[in-house]
Image 1 (cartoon, helix red, strand yellow):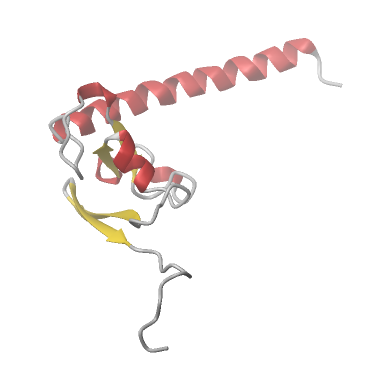
Image 2 (spheres, one colour):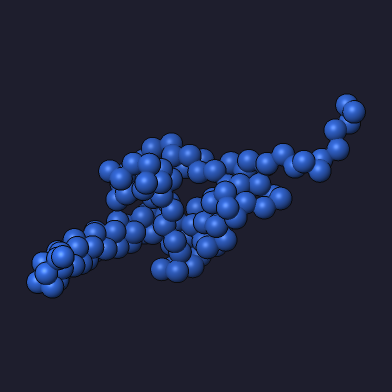
Length: 121
């Protein structure tokens, strides 16, 4: 069984690393928001600091890009939810593609519905 002292030491070191990451992330987030003029890059709404930063390449796919400013884009909550396939609706899913130097392409991908009538039939 792990002693209480060892457990507390592990928790303290994790929290220090986590606090350091949060400071670095907040610094990158504010830089991206400033670059994007505090506007959603897709719909253009101006929300200031209430905007969210979207990781174009998911952190789980490439952890080295989690703080890369060319991998972060400012999106409002609605557009950010639209990038997630779990929230994709009948209007499709928003795909964000990096072009480099803080530029991004936005494409809407429609998911074919099983209820769509095929005129060929």
